[in-house]
Length: 374
Image 1 (cartoon, helix red, strand yellow):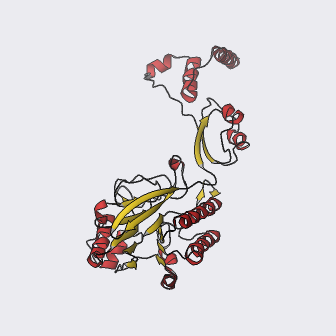
Image 2 (image 1 turned 60 degrees about the horizontal axis):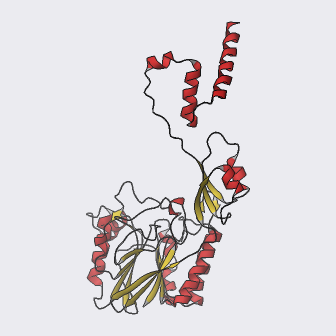
Image 3 (image 1 turned 90 degrees about the horizontal axis):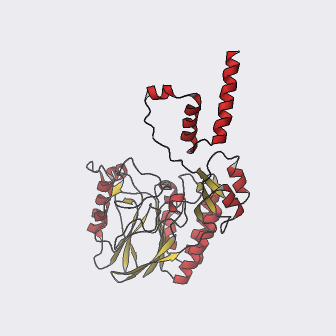
Protein backbone atom coordinates (compact mmCIF):
# COMPACT_ATOMS: atom_id res chain seq x y z
CA UNK A 1 0.00 0.00 0.00
CA UNK A 2 1.30 3.44 -0.90
CA UNK A 3 -0.27 6.77 0.00
CA UNK A 4 0.52 10.49 -0.17
CA UNK A 5 0.31 12.50 3.07
CA UNK A 6 -0.14 16.27 3.03
CA UNK A 7 -1.89 18.85 5.22
CA UNK A 8 -2.32 22.54 5.99
CA UNK A 9 -3.31 23.73 2.52
CA UNK A 10 -4.82 26.88 4.08
CA UNK A 11 -6.70 27.69 0.90
CA UNK A 12 -7.62 31.38 0.82
CA UNK A 13 -4.59 32.36 2.92
CA UNK A 14 -3.56 36.03 2.83
CA UNK A 15 0.01 36.92 3.82
CA UNK A 16 0.77 40.61 4.45
CA UNK A 17 -2.27 41.59 2.38
CA UNK A 18 -1.35 39.34 -0.57
CA UNK A 19 -3.60 36.42 -1.58
CA UNK A 20 -1.78 33.10 -1.86
CA UNK A 21 -4.51 31.44 -3.96
CA UNK A 22 -2.58 31.49 -7.26
CA UNK A 23 0.45 30.05 -5.45
CA UNK A 24 -1.77 27.36 -3.91
CA UNK A 25 -3.27 26.33 -7.25
CA UNK A 26 0.26 26.06 -8.66
CA UNK A 27 1.45 23.79 -5.83
CA UNK A 28 -1.69 21.64 -5.93
CA UNK A 29 -0.95 20.90 -9.59
CA UNK A 30 2.50 19.67 -8.50
CA UNK A 31 0.96 17.43 -5.85
CA UNK A 32 -1.33 16.01 -8.55
CA UNK A 33 1.69 15.18 -10.72
CA UNK A 34 3.46 13.52 -7.81
CA UNK A 35 0.38 11.42 -6.97
CA UNK A 36 0.23 10.24 -10.58
CA UNK A 37 3.97 9.54 -10.84
CA UNK A 38 4.01 7.60 -7.56
CA UNK A 39 0.77 5.76 -8.47
CA UNK A 40 -0.48 6.16 -4.90
CA UNK A 41 -3.35 4.06 -3.62
CA UNK A 42 -4.74 6.88 -1.46
CA UNK A 43 -4.24 10.50 -0.47
CA UNK A 44 -4.38 11.88 3.10
CA UNK A 45 -5.31 15.49 3.95
CA UNK A 46 -4.60 16.05 7.65
CA UNK A 47 -6.62 19.21 8.30
CA UNK A 48 -6.64 22.96 7.68
CA UNK A 49 -7.92 22.61 4.15
CA UNK A 50 -9.06 26.23 4.40
CA UNK A 51 -7.42 29.15 6.18
CA UNK A 52 -10.58 30.25 7.95
CA UNK A 53 -13.96 28.89 8.96
CA UNK A 54 -15.81 30.93 6.33
CA UNK A 55 -13.50 30.75 3.32
CA UNK A 56 -13.82 33.01 0.27
CA UNK A 57 -15.78 31.61 -2.67
CA UNK A 58 -12.70 31.29 -4.89
CA UNK A 59 -10.96 29.16 -2.22
CA UNK A 60 -14.03 26.88 -2.07
CA UNK A 61 -13.84 26.47 -5.85
CA UNK A 62 -10.14 25.58 -5.71
CA UNK A 63 -10.79 22.85 -3.13
CA UNK A 64 -13.78 21.53 -5.07
CA UNK A 65 -11.78 21.40 -8.31
CA UNK A 66 -8.79 19.61 -6.78
CA UNK A 67 -10.94 17.04 -4.98
CA UNK A 68 -12.75 16.34 -8.27
CA UNK A 69 -9.38 15.97 -10.01
CA UNK A 70 -7.93 13.60 -7.44
CA UNK A 71 -10.99 11.59 -6.50
CA UNK A 72 -13.22 11.56 -9.59
CA UNK A 73 -10.88 11.96 -12.55
CA UNK A 74 -7.88 10.06 -11.15
CA UNK A 75 -9.96 7.72 -8.97
CA UNK A 76 -7.75 8.17 -5.88
CA UNK A 77 -9.44 7.49 -2.52
CA UNK A 78 -9.08 10.48 -0.15
CA UNK A 79 -9.02 10.51 3.65
CA UNK A 80 -9.51 14.04 4.99
CA UNK A 81 -10.27 15.76 8.30
CA UNK A 82 -10.94 19.28 9.54
CA UNK A 83 -8.24 21.31 11.28
CA UNK A 84 -8.42 24.18 13.76
CA UNK A 85 -8.79 26.72 10.91
CA UNK A 86 -11.68 24.85 9.27
CA UNK A 87 -15.37 24.85 10.07
CA UNK A 88 -16.08 21.28 11.16
CA UNK A 89 -19.74 21.59 10.15
CA UNK A 90 -19.01 22.95 6.68
CA UNK A 91 -16.45 20.25 5.90
CA UNK A 92 -18.83 17.58 7.21
CA UNK A 93 -21.50 18.62 4.69
CA UNK A 94 -22.15 15.84 2.18
CA UNK A 95 -19.64 13.47 3.76
CA UNK A 96 -22.06 10.52 3.86
CA UNK A 97 -22.65 10.47 0.13
CA UNK A 98 -19.01 11.36 -0.68
CA UNK A 99 -18.09 7.95 0.72
CA UNK A 100 -19.67 6.23 -2.29
CA UNK A 101 -16.81 7.72 -4.29
CA UNK A 102 -14.25 6.85 -1.57
CA UNK A 103 -13.88 10.44 -0.43
CA UNK A 104 -13.86 10.09 3.35
CA UNK A 105 -14.26 13.55 4.91
CA UNK A 106 -14.67 13.75 8.70
CA UNK A 107 -15.36 17.24 9.99
CA UNK A 108 -16.85 16.64 13.45
CA UNK A 109 -15.92 14.40 16.36
CA UNK A 110 -18.68 12.13 17.64
CA UNK A 111 -19.02 9.70 20.52
CA UNK A 112 -17.90 6.80 18.34
CA UNK A 113 -14.85 6.55 16.10
CA UNK A 114 -15.00 3.86 13.44
CA UNK A 115 -12.14 2.60 11.34
CA UNK A 116 -12.34 2.65 7.56
CA UNK A 117 -11.13 -0.66 6.09
CA UNK A 118 -8.74 0.03 3.24
CA UNK A 119 -6.56 -2.62 1.62
CA UNK A 120 -4.43 -4.16 4.42
CA UNK A 121 -5.13 -1.31 6.84
CA UNK A 122 -7.72 0.50 8.91
CA UNK A 123 -7.79 4.29 8.68
CA UNK A 124 -9.02 6.32 11.66
CA UNK A 125 -10.04 9.91 11.02
CA UNK A 126 -9.65 12.14 14.10
CA UNK A 127 -10.52 15.80 13.31
CA UNK A 128 -9.16 18.68 15.37
CA UNK A 129 -10.98 18.82 18.68
CA UNK A 130 -10.86 20.82 21.88
CA UNK A 131 -11.20 19.02 25.21
CA UNK A 132 -14.78 20.24 25.72
CA UNK A 133 -15.91 18.56 22.49
CA UNK A 134 -14.64 15.14 23.54
CA UNK A 135 -15.78 15.66 27.14
CA UNK A 136 -19.34 16.21 25.90
CA UNK A 137 -19.24 13.51 23.22
CA UNK A 138 -17.87 10.89 25.62
CA UNK A 139 -19.91 12.15 28.61
CA UNK A 140 -16.71 12.09 30.66
CA UNK A 141 -16.12 15.06 32.96
CA UNK A 142 -12.58 13.89 33.73
CA UNK A 143 -11.47 15.04 30.25
CA UNK A 144 -9.96 18.46 30.87
CA UNK A 145 -6.92 18.82 28.65
CA UNK A 146 -5.94 18.21 25.02
CA UNK A 147 -3.91 15.26 26.29
CA UNK A 148 -6.92 13.79 28.11
CA UNK A 149 -9.06 14.17 25.00
CA UNK A 150 -6.60 12.51 22.62
CA UNK A 151 -5.90 9.71 25.08
CA UNK A 152 -9.64 9.04 25.37
CA UNK A 153 -10.06 8.96 21.59
CA UNK A 154 -7.12 6.65 20.90
CA UNK A 155 -8.08 4.35 23.80
CA UNK A 156 -11.48 3.83 22.18
CA UNK A 157 -9.83 3.20 18.82
CA UNK A 158 -7.51 0.55 20.31
CA UNK A 159 -10.52 -1.23 21.79
CA UNK A 160 -12.00 -1.57 18.29
CA UNK A 161 -9.17 -2.05 15.86
CA UNK A 162 -8.38 -5.22 13.96
CA UNK A 163 -4.99 -6.38 15.22
CA UNK A 164 -4.33 -8.23 11.96
CA UNK A 165 -4.25 -4.95 10.00
CA UNK A 166 -1.99 -1.89 9.80
CA UNK A 167 -3.43 1.02 11.77
CA UNK A 168 -3.30 4.53 10.30
CA UNK A 169 -4.46 7.58 12.27
CA UNK A 170 -5.10 10.91 10.56
CA UNK A 171 -5.07 13.77 13.08
CA UNK A 172 -4.55 17.48 13.60
CA UNK A 173 -2.73 18.26 16.83
CA UNK A 174 0.35 19.79 18.45
CA UNK A 175 2.61 16.97 19.61
CA UNK A 176 4.93 17.82 22.52
CA UNK A 177 8.41 18.63 21.28
CA UNK A 178 7.16 19.76 17.88
CA UNK A 179 8.67 22.88 16.32
CA UNK A 180 6.06 25.57 15.54
CA UNK A 181 6.27 28.41 13.02
CA UNK A 182 4.82 31.93 13.00
CA UNK A 183 2.00 30.99 10.61
CA UNK A 184 0.17 28.56 12.89
CA UNK A 185 -2.71 29.70 15.03
CA UNK A 186 -2.08 29.00 18.71
CA UNK A 187 -4.52 26.40 20.00
CA UNK A 188 -4.40 27.57 23.62
CA UNK A 189 -2.41 29.82 25.95
CA UNK A 190 0.86 28.31 27.16
CA UNK A 191 1.62 24.65 26.50
CA UNK A 192 -1.78 23.20 27.44
CA UNK A 193 -2.52 22.47 23.76
CA UNK A 194 0.22 19.80 23.57
CA UNK A 195 -0.39 16.07 23.36
CA UNK A 196 2.24 13.41 24.04
CA UNK A 197 3.56 10.87 21.57
CA UNK A 198 2.17 8.22 23.94
CA UNK A 199 -1.29 9.02 22.58
CA UNK A 200 -0.34 7.32 19.32
CA UNK A 201 1.28 4.16 20.69
CA UNK A 202 0.47 1.14 18.58
CA UNK A 203 -0.40 2.97 15.36
CA UNK A 204 1.58 1.91 12.32
CA UNK A 205 1.58 5.45 10.94
CA UNK A 206 0.21 8.67 12.42
CA UNK A 207 -0.39 11.28 9.72
CA UNK A 208 -0.57 14.70 11.34
CA UNK A 209 -1.34 18.26 10.37
CA UNK A 210 -1.07 21.59 12.23
CA UNK A 211 2.69 22.26 12.46
CA UNK A 212 4.03 23.70 9.21
CA UNK A 213 7.67 22.60 9.43
CA UNK A 214 8.07 19.31 7.52
CA UNK A 215 10.39 17.98 10.22
CA UNK A 216 8.58 19.43 13.22
CA UNK A 217 9.09 16.19 15.13
CA UNK A 218 11.42 13.19 14.85
CA UNK A 219 9.63 9.92 15.51
CA UNK A 220 9.63 6.50 13.79
CA UNK A 221 5.86 6.42 13.21
CA UNK A 222 4.51 9.94 13.87
CA UNK A 223 4.92 12.41 11.00
CA UNK A 224 3.89 15.92 10.07
CA UNK A 225 3.80 16.56 6.34
CA UNK A 226 4.24 20.30 6.89
CA UNK A 227 2.40 22.85 4.79
CA UNK A 228 3.00 22.63 1.02
CA UNK A 229 3.83 26.35 0.91
CA UNK A 230 5.69 28.77 3.16
CA UNK A 231 3.23 31.02 4.97
CA UNK A 232 5.66 32.99 7.15
CA UNK A 233 9.29 34.04 7.04
CA UNK A 234 10.03 31.73 9.97
CA UNK A 235 9.68 28.99 7.32
CA UNK A 236 12.09 30.64 4.86
CA UNK A 237 14.68 27.87 5.24
CA UNK A 238 12.16 25.02 4.91
CA UNK A 239 12.14 22.85 1.81
CA UNK A 240 8.45 22.02 1.48
CA UNK A 241 7.35 18.54 0.49
CA UNK A 242 4.70 15.85 0.64
CA UNK A 243 5.30 12.46 2.21
CA UNK A 244 5.08 9.20 0.28
CA UNK A 245 4.36 6.37 2.70
CA UNK A 246 4.67 2.68 1.88
CA UNK A 247 3.36 -0.21 3.95
CA UNK A 248 3.59 -3.92 3.40
CA UNK A 249 1.02 -5.82 5.40
CA UNK A 250 1.20 -4.47 8.94
CA UNK A 251 4.70 -3.06 8.54
CA UNK A 252 5.75 0.51 7.75
CA UNK A 253 8.35 0.08 5.02
CA UNK A 254 9.36 3.64 4.08
CA UNK A 255 8.49 7.32 4.47
CA UNK A 256 10.07 9.53 1.82
CA UNK A 257 9.73 13.14 0.76
CA UNK A 258 8.83 14.47 -2.66
CA UNK A 259 9.92 18.09 -2.70
CA UNK A 260 7.77 20.93 -3.99
CA UNK A 261 8.88 24.02 -5.92
CA UNK A 262 6.75 27.13 -5.35
CA UNK A 263 5.78 29.56 -8.06
CA UNK A 264 7.35 32.30 -5.92
CA UNK A 265 9.60 31.40 -3.02
CA UNK A 266 9.48 33.19 0.35
CA UNK A 267 12.94 34.50 1.21
CA UNK A 268 14.87 36.82 3.51
CA UNK A 269 17.54 39.08 2.01
CA UNK A 270 19.82 41.63 3.64
CA UNK A 271 21.91 44.55 2.44
CA UNK A 272 22.00 48.29 2.09
CA UNK A 273 19.50 50.05 -0.17
CA UNK A 274 22.25 50.75 -2.68
CA UNK A 275 23.49 47.16 -2.69
CA UNK A 276 20.04 45.67 -3.20
CA UNK A 277 19.04 48.06 -5.99
CA UNK A 278 22.34 48.00 -7.86
CA UNK A 279 22.95 44.24 -7.63
CA UNK A 280 19.64 42.39 -7.90
CA UNK A 281 19.36 39.01 -6.25
CA UNK A 282 18.27 35.95 -8.20
CA UNK A 283 14.51 35.63 -8.84
CA UNK A 284 13.56 39.19 -7.81
CA UNK A 285 9.82 38.38 -8.20
CA UNK A 286 9.87 36.11 -5.13
CA UNK A 287 8.21 37.10 -1.86
CA UNK A 288 10.75 38.92 0.29
CA UNK A 289 11.46 40.10 3.76
CA UNK A 290 14.16 42.74 3.30
CA UNK A 291 16.52 43.54 6.16
CA UNK A 292 18.02 46.93 5.36
CA UNK A 293 21.47 47.47 6.84
CA UNK A 294 21.65 51.23 6.20
CA UNK A 295 22.32 53.54 9.10
CA UNK A 296 20.43 56.78 9.49
CA UNK A 297 17.25 58.00 7.84
CA UNK A 298 16.04 56.80 4.42
CA UNK A 299 13.37 58.38 2.24
CA UNK A 300 10.71 55.87 1.06
CA UNK A 301 12.92 52.75 1.07
CA UNK A 302 9.93 50.46 0.41
CA UNK A 303 8.90 52.41 -2.68
CA UNK A 304 12.43 52.34 -4.06
CA UNK A 305 12.88 48.63 -3.39
CA UNK A 306 9.54 47.71 -4.96
CA UNK A 307 10.74 49.09 -8.29
CA UNK A 308 13.12 46.12 -8.33
CA UNK A 309 11.40 43.63 -6.01
CA UNK A 310 7.63 43.96 -6.62
CA UNK A 311 6.63 41.30 -4.07
CA UNK A 312 8.21 42.62 -0.88
CA UNK A 313 5.99 41.62 2.02
CA UNK A 314 8.01 42.93 4.96
CA UNK A 315 10.77 45.47 5.54
CA UNK A 316 13.00 45.66 8.59
CA UNK A 317 15.72 48.14 9.49
CA UNK A 318 19.03 47.29 11.09
CA UNK A 319 18.78 47.39 14.85
CA UNK A 320 21.44 49.62 16.33
CA UNK A 321 23.45 48.43 19.30
CA UNK A 322 22.98 51.05 21.96
CA UNK A 323 25.58 51.90 24.55
CA UNK A 324 24.54 51.53 28.13
CA UNK A 325 24.90 54.79 30.08
CA UNK A 326 25.19 54.96 33.81
CA UNK A 327 25.20 58.76 34.12
CA UNK A 328 23.78 60.02 37.37
CA UNK A 329 21.44 63.00 37.50
CA UNK A 330 24.28 65.19 38.75
CA UNK A 331 26.52 64.13 35.85
CA UNK A 332 23.79 64.86 33.33
CA UNK A 333 23.23 68.32 34.78
CA UNK A 334 26.93 69.13 34.31
CA UNK A 335 26.78 68.46 30.56
CA UNK A 336 26.23 71.28 28.12
CA UNK A 337 23.65 71.32 25.32
CA UNK A 338 26.07 69.94 22.72
CA UNK A 339 27.06 66.97 24.88
CA UNK A 340 23.45 66.14 25.70
CA UNK A 341 22.38 66.32 22.07
CA UNK A 342 25.38 64.21 21.06
CA UNK A 343 24.38 61.55 23.59
CA UNK A 344 20.79 61.57 22.26
CA UNK A 345 22.02 61.38 18.64
CA UNK A 346 24.18 58.36 19.45
CA UNK A 347 21.30 56.65 21.26
CA UNK A 348 18.97 57.04 18.26
CA UNK A 349 21.41 56.46 15.39
CA UNK A 350 24.05 54.24 16.95
CA UNK A 351 26.85 56.56 15.75
CA UNK A 352 28.59 59.59 17.19
CA UNK A 353 28.35 63.10 15.78
CA UNK A 354 31.09 63.98 13.33
CA UNK A 355 33.30 67.00 13.98
CA UNK A 356 31.52 68.90 11.20
CA UNK A 357 28.11 68.12 12.75
CA UNK A 358 29.37 69.20 16.17
CA UNK A 359 30.59 72.53 14.78
CA UNK A 360 27.29 73.22 12.99
CA UNK A 361 25.33 72.38 16.14
CA UNK A 362 27.60 74.58 18.24
CA UNK A 363 26.86 77.48 15.84
CA UNK A 364 23.11 76.81 16.09
CA UNK A 365 23.18 76.73 19.89
CA UNK A 366 25.24 79.93 19.99
CA UNK A 367 22.79 81.70 17.67
CA UNK A 368 19.86 80.54 19.81
CA UNK A 369 21.51 81.88 22.95
CA UNK A 370 22.07 85.29 21.32
CA UNK A 371 18.42 85.47 20.26
CA UNK A 372 17.30 84.57 23.79
CA UNK A 373 19.54 87.30 25.21
CA UNK A 374 17.97 89.89 22.94
